[in-house]
Length: 153
View (cartoon, rainbow, N blue to C red):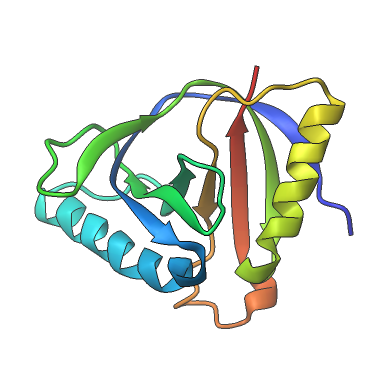
């Protein structure tokens, strides 16, 4: 089934995250500890997550990728060590929902970028994946939901 791709208007969203350069072959094993570190900081600060964990892609994935593992928060926090405050931008984003294993995400990304080109949309910032389904709570990978957002102009 072909994914439904559309544009949406987003409000700015404060996040707390850790930015790292990670080997694509190690991305899965690297993300869990980074999310854990950010989540621990958010809880220690007396705050709580305002949404699901997400990964911002600051570079195009090749052998390595510059990514930021982040958690949305209601208001910015000071940060600590590697955990820094950031913000998802307000504005227009192309978006699509991927349902299934993370291994199949590249096909959904390809469909999204092809659709953006067909609509005459240009990238306007770092895209991100929001991990709606917690793999620890749902072992059936065919049910995993990942929302992808790509700021456009």
